[in-house]
Length: 400
Image (cartoon, helix red, strand yellow):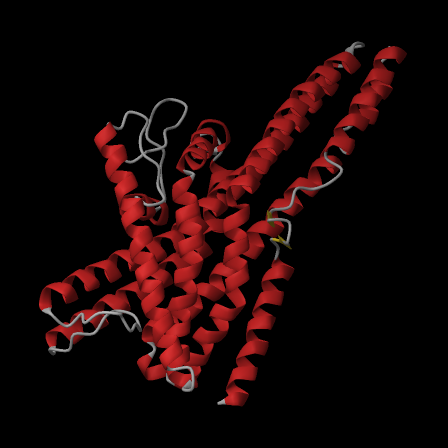
């Protein structure tokens, strides 16, 4: 029922464990197969609506907890991190779930045209795997944070205390057994949606970007190899041959630039929401870890995951800027002057020079991933968020 990307040869595309877990446990966000029955589609929409309502109910209960404890800074900040992440994921998950078709089209195009296969480009594939390792680490920390909530909830149940997974004050009495069970199951489901989206979307975005960078690298290597082969032939019509190679490369270049813009369109809003909540969430998490580290195991995992998340996203944004910034230099450094020197056709040389100028102009501005054009995703942006979070943290500790 759930969509599974496929490679150009029809084989199932390999998926890293964060994306595979995201697909299997988060049907709110993950698209359905094209051949899904109407019952599967109806069930999918029902789950989306039910989860939306549960998020609203949980939001209200957590906000009531914050209002009741507004004069107790320690208690209030115990509930702030989960409340902030609930609002953040409410916006991100359901926007993504509402536009599943666009996400599926992006995945289809990625695995058919962009994905770097290990058998074809082993060195580039290995480099991509290395770049993705920090994302896998932060995924593990997010998963550990979720497990700590599950373990604590189970422990409370074993000792006879009927407490919910998160700091909440509901509008109704949840202590009757069947109501408590339903509330706990809804908490577990919300926890799965939140956690799998946080590491699943980060891994998906990073996979798209790093493979796109790899595809730019493949394009560069192919261009240089073809130019070298032309120079070795020592033919007089080499300028026209070079022009055909350049046109072919430009077409591939433009296709990659278009895919980069499609990534931007898909993730821009959700990146904006994530970054908007990042500093405040880190501040609240850091405060709880600082004030009561022994009772904040889940917050410790969560804090480390958040810090790694913003650093990894920043590095990813910087990498795509660096890669696309080198493309205009690639054309300038493609030995066109040797081609002109070897060619005897002045008109062909003039056409070639215009093509080189066009290629450089087409890539004069590097692509940068933005969050609704408010934030440019980069390492400096990540550093500024961490600095802002630390400033808020020191301010809170001075109030305590």
